[in-house]
Length: 227
Ligand code: NAP
Image 1 (spheres, rainbow, N blue to C red):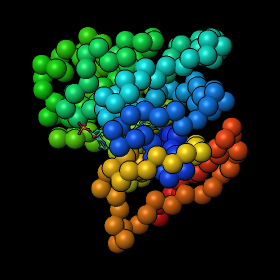
Image 2: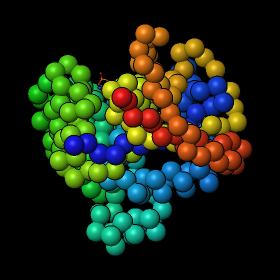
Image 3: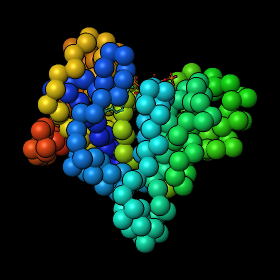
Image 4: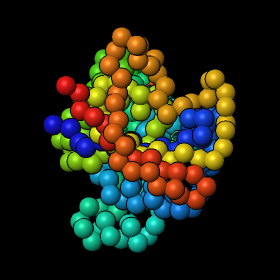
């Protein structure tokens, strides 16, 4: 069993998540920020790849105090679990995600992660070992399910999104398309990694809704089940 997985990301009109220097860009505005906060508040866990932690140092916490309070009223704890996919335990011990906000933190590593760093991380997080050299995402999701995570929000970046999509582990996709062109052939896109070849089945999506929002548009896609 695995959690229901939904991805949320913001990209420029040309499909970039950030600049070629991997610098965070403000692609959407306050209305979209509130939508993302509500999505977070409705999730049991929020997950990112280590590339995003190293580039942006996000806390991944729910910001609106009313949403935090309503989680507590529902007995779900003030914050969703925060999960970082990090095969070699590269996460800095002072990363915001390990310190800001209450609740469960999970660092998912592979067997190749150095034992000393794993031990140091255990002071701040639950360390889950899944996979030999790289995190085995299917196994990780099973482990997260056994930790009680039923709705998992994935906030990027493009390498992690691609890994999950390729493995058939994404159910829904929310993409905010902002009114800018960032450009750059090496700038992160919505789905990076190695990509799929023409000989492989692509990940097919069904359009659930299109909603104009501020100066851009929110696309909601459902991922079609594979045969
Ligand atoms: P990422 O997707 O956050 O993390 C990728 C890393 O995850 C991999 O390099 C790999 O590192 C680890 N990983 C472990 N197992 C994996 C697996 N099975 N499949 C895939 N990845 C696995 O990093 P990124 O692609 O470099 O994206 C970071 C950029 O995206 C930043 O510039 C950030 O600003 C941007 N971003 C933008 C948004 C947005 O909505 N606009 C959201 C998030 C991030 P190891 O091998 O070391 O484990």
